[in-house]
Length: 209
Image (tube, rainbow, N blue to C red):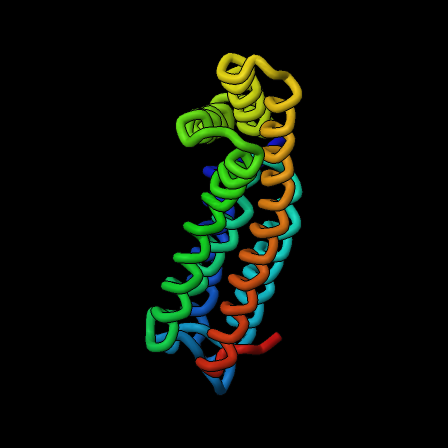
């Protein structure tokens, strides 16, 4: 069964609430406390980091499944961590960069598919139409509706424009190649986001794993 965005968000926020309560309920359970308000014990912080790290890693490898917003899930995990521990310098800086990468990662597939279509000789209007079809298809028929809609629209418009199936297939093939490369790009974006989260923890003296 496909995990919905709302379900994942509810699970993560529920974990966040439990951690907050456990951290505040027994502040004297450890000599060292963490968080902007000193509300997290060593044990609570370690559990939080393990949960966030697992969510990030699962989301990263879930990118192989079209339609799963793994980049967004990684960002949500980082957001939950920042909300629990506090937005202190340099937390806001690292979270800002992670947010920018999240936005990039969520549009890189459309950008690379468009670049592939242009490389195959498709004009700008046809390329934009195929990207629009990809967006609509992803929303209406996930997980594969976007790429199928983009390929069908591009091939159809190129056949109408050129009346040459060979050239239309070439443009469509380049679009599909761009989609394949976009997975690699999204994976590396997600990897960088996780690496930034680790650096953020190390610089703020919170790294316990």
